[in-house]
Image 1 (cartoon, rainbow, N blue to C red):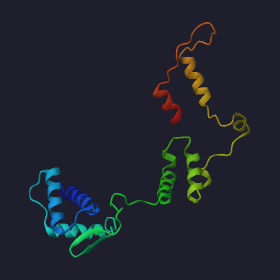
Image 2: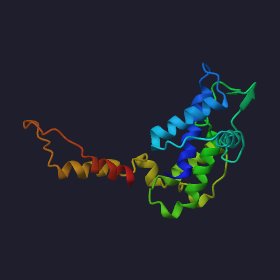
Image 3: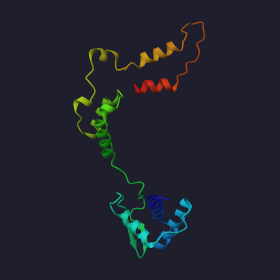
Image 4: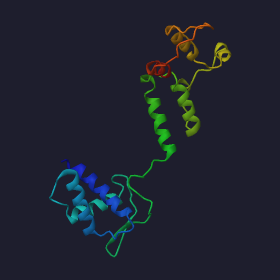
Length: 191
């Protein structure tokens, strides 16, 4: 079993133990819980050393992996200073995430064929307050575009699809129910 997977199992187990406020969590308890978790996951009976647990706690407290866990130890008992904290709840600021997405989309603009990408970039730009070059934004509408109100050919695609299904428009003949297929839906969305 890869060592890094063992470390992840230990981090997860330490996190679960520190979140459980009903138990006094000391090094011996963490050794026991991590050894059991590793045995359950990998079948490894060798166990975990005290040095490994102390090193794991040091890593969780530090910025090495970006956790910066608020772990304190008092009289040999470990706990989080924030009862709601979990290493799996560490979050990226939503604005930071949107800015990263916006930068990625601008970098890959010419590799993405979705015609709605400029609209998405425009909306992201308005949320993040980070300007995007005009070449990546939607083109101003022409007179014809203004008249049709932005239907973006969806109605013509639907008309073509319905004609291909031979939908009868007769008053006296009961038409077959129209069943839209996923392939058609995805083609319209992806265009």
